[in-house]
Amino acid sequence: MSGIMTPLLIGLGVASCILVLIITIRMDIVDRESAPIHLTWRSILYMPWLAWEIVKANIDVARVVLHPRLPISPTLIHVKPTQKSDLALVFYANSITLTPGTISVDVDHGDILVHAITRDAAAGLENGEMDRRVTQVAGEDN
Image: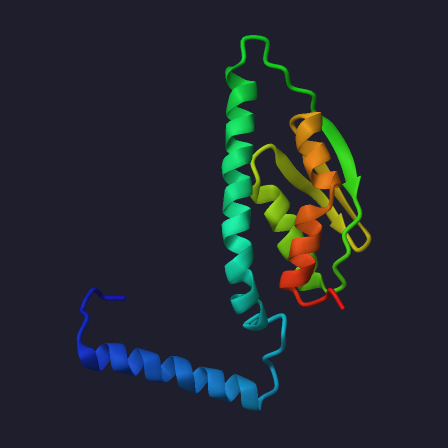
């Protein structure tokens, strides 16, 4: 990007993107994981829910940090994901890490090791709501 934005350059950029997409589709390189377009429409409903969970977790972490006694209770838990594909599993692990107070430490099929700053944050994951929603977004809830 040179900073010059003329209709010709923008048009050529869009055309080159479309050409590359057509070529990769013809080469059969594009699959559901390299271009997860199927997640776009379903994630529109998931993102506001995740944003609200992030806001609530931010408030909880701020409350813990600002409390005079700093009532943290760090814990490691194993979460059993229900996702089948690698893409959905990564989507779930990233959702956990995006939520303040929790971090996905190790991801493996059938198990995610999560570090939580408090036992309440860990309990929030164990109820399975995020797992269920990610499974719905990935279309694996059949």
